[in-house]
Image 1 (tube, rainbow, N blue to C red):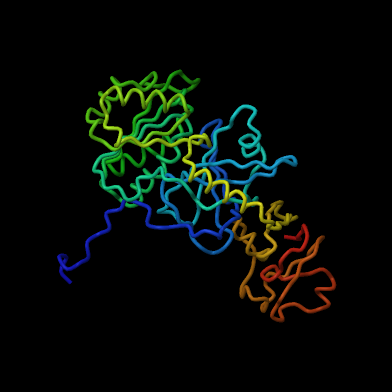
Image 2: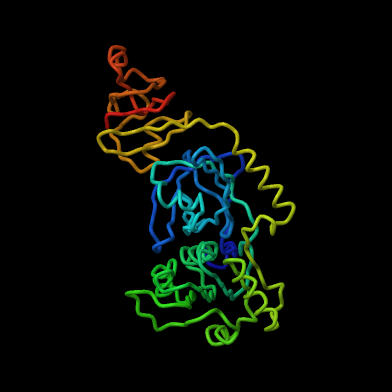
Length: 369
C-alpha cells in the first residue's frame, strides 16, 4: 500500500479512551512514590481486568473513611491516558488536612479506595493548537503533567512551554522527569522558578514569582499560545490578571480549580450524583499474608488471588480455575466461599485450607503466605 493510500492520522493529541460509567468504582493501590519531601504519588490499578479510559486533565473524586468520618476529595489524574493500565494521583501534604496527612502517613500498596469515574473538562483533548503554554504552581502541576506525559508517550511534535513555580528547588515536583522528557523530545521545554533557597540544593535558574517580564524572556510568543493554568487560587488569580493585562485573547485561557463553588452547576450536580453512587455498599475485607507481612483489601466479589495480584503480589498459581491445587493455602483465620474444580479435597477444606484462585472472602482473613 502506498503511503498516500493510508487513512489520515488522528490529530487528537490525547483523549482517545473513555472510562465507562458504573464500573471500576474501587481502585487498588499498586505503589506509593515520594516526589518531594511533602508530595507523594499514589498509583492505582482497576478492580477488574480492564484499562482506564479518561482524558488528560480530568479528576477523580475519591471516598475516604478516616477515624469514623467519610470524606470526599477531588484529585487530578497525574498519569497520562497513554498508560491505561494504571492511574495515579499526586497529593501534597496539607498541614492539618485529614485526608492528605492520612494518605501520606497510612495509605500503602494493597489498600483500596472508592472512586467516581473521571470527570472534568480542563483538557487539551481534541485541540489542534500548534503551541501550548502550561503554567503551574505547587501541586497544580498534576493535570499539566498528564498532558505532557501524553505528548511524550505519543512522540508528539507539539510545542509545549512548561513553566512551573515552586517554593524552593527541593519542592519542584517531577523536576527530573520533565528534564528527561525534554532531552528526548525537544518540543517539550520546561522552566522552573523558585522563591527561596533549599538546604543542599544549588540553584541558578529563575527566581521569584511568575511575572510578565519573566514570561517574555522564557516564552516571547506566549500571547500566540493556548494557555493552561493550574495552581493555588492566589497563583491562578495573579496569572490570569497578568495575562489579561498583557492582552491575551482569553479564549486561549484555560484554568483548573478544585474549589467546589467554582465548578459549573452542571459539573457540581455530576459530582454530587457520582459521590452518591459511592455510598453504595461494596464490602471489602482485610487479607493479611502472614509470611510476607503484606496486607491487601479484597472486595467480596473477587478472589483472594486476584486481589493479591492486583496489589502487586506474586503468589503461586497455575490453572486459576480451582483444578490444579497450586495455590492451595492454609487459612489461619477467617472464612471464604469456594467454587473449585476438584483441586482440593473436603478433608483439606475441613482442615482450613483453600484454593486462593477461587476463594472469595466472607470475613477478614489471615493467610499462611
